[in-house]
Image 1 (cartoon, helix red, strand yellow):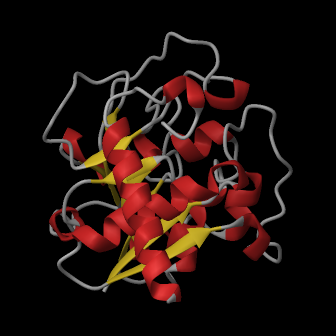
Image 2 (image 1 turned 30 degrees about the vertical axis):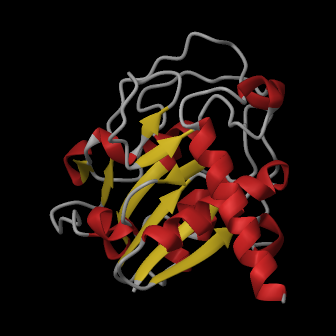
Length: 227
């Protein structure tokens, strides 16, 4: 079973649903998808919102290994994405040498704000944590207590690991940054990191037409299920 945890934000509910649908319809193996929702984490995650947070799951994403019982592997991904390939292909890239595997972007955003006027922060390893293939047993440092109290940089720069040698690299197609990376028709997992086509100002961005097609397919499928 491929375990997938999707960051959940009340401002992007539809985006999370479209991502989950796009994962399922492209998958060749069983997938278990769970949202990382603050409303479901109240007993273990009570960290006050930081003014620099751009999403509700900025920090709670690091509870993924705990949610998986520190067993096996799990995938975390932001909700502002769409899957264009079989997630089993990503799953096959698991490498026991590493605690976590990510696309190692060199990403220095030029803009000061992104969707909904959120502050655009700049730091080393920017966007690495937006897609993580996690070897949960090797991520035991990510206890609820630690995730509640660690700084943003400690979490997002993977300072909870003994060293960067425990961070493996994934091919760039598994976290294609729309608006930053060069256009890539072979992108497997598309990330609308500045803002997705569900916002008016980004309706014509790269892969917007595919996102709308995926949304419509999801709604059609749900409509048939109700009949």
